[in-house]
Length: 200
Image 1 (cartoon, rainbow, N blue to C red):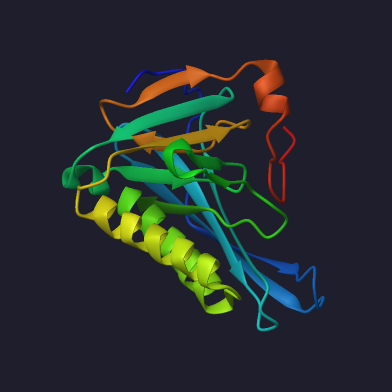
Image 2 (cartoon, rainbow, N blue to C red):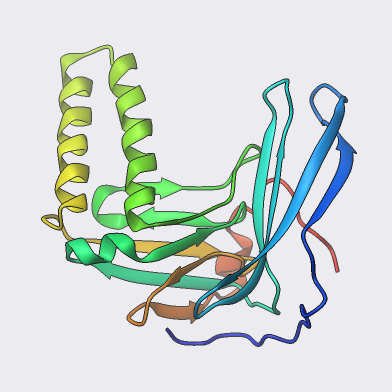
């Protein structure tokens, strides 16, 4: 993996933290958890999570280093690539150009640490839901064909390109053969940033 940006944060004294806030939906007390983790080849991160009884959920992953707006590109061409780790923060945009997939962050965007298979699983969930709502035979056929493509991809039979773009530099694809480039100011400015931005 090509290194862009530098790590200048001392996290030696960081611990897991639980804090209190109010739910932005129902205003009830809300517990927030901040847990430190270390991602091989990437460094220390803080995982933030919060769930309210009203149904509100929030999750994010903050990378504890100085990062620039980045684009990660991974060519997926075999079943082993399914295990490549993916970090997607609330400000991360996922693109798969071969399939016309663009997943942009919105107000309810959730962060996660998973792998490429996990990204495909999330796509399958969305497409399966769309299939249930399909009103025409053409829509059903398109959804079923795409589900078959996703199944083939997980088995290593459908090559595709996974692109992760993050204007805050808090998302990544972790693999030795990932192409990492800095986004231009114009490219970074055109991307969504999700729910929260922490100003330093």
